[in-house]
Structure formats: structure tokens, C-alpha cells
Length: 79
Image 1 (cartoon, rainbow, N blue to C red):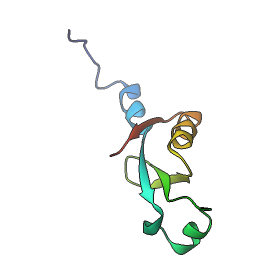
Image 2 (cartoon, one colour; image 1 turned 180 degrees about the vertical axis):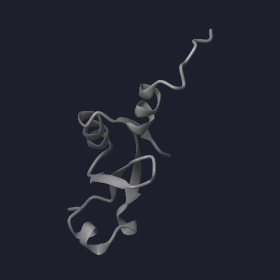
Image 3 (cartoon, rainbow, N blue to C red; image 1 turned 60 degrees about the vertical axis):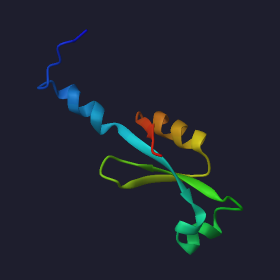
Image 4 (cartoon, rainbow, N blue to C red; image 1 turned 45 degrees about the vertical axis):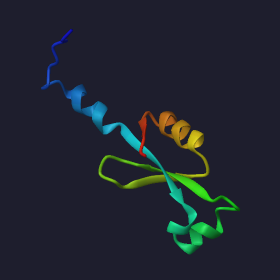
């Protein structure tokens, strides 16, 4: 089934702007000051926008997704 989509509709592109990407980051790949505040974690989770800018760095995957949704973003996992 094909549903017609109006590509000129302003909401069409606003939804794409609200997508963020969640990826695991190894502690060893982070700056020393971030590693020092990681408190025993071996991995953190970064939330990035579509341009690749890091928006947040949190201690677990569930928190990354919750944080994104609380700010009206649609989180997508990155493998």
C-alpha cells in the first residue's frame, strides 16, 4: 500500500530534525577528565544529532533513550 506524502509540508522535515543517534562509547576513547568522572564505568552512551554533534553523554543506554524522548527527540541506536 502506498500512502501519498506531501514533500512540501513543513512537518515532513521537522520530524527528521528530531532524530538523534545513541551509540556506545568505550571509556578509553574519551578525554581524561571525562574518564575520571565515569566512576568505574567501562562504557558510556553518547547521544548525537544528525550532523554528528554530541548532545549528551550518559551512563547507560536506557538513560540515553529516556533523555532523548524527554526532549521530544526520536532516538535511534547506532551499532
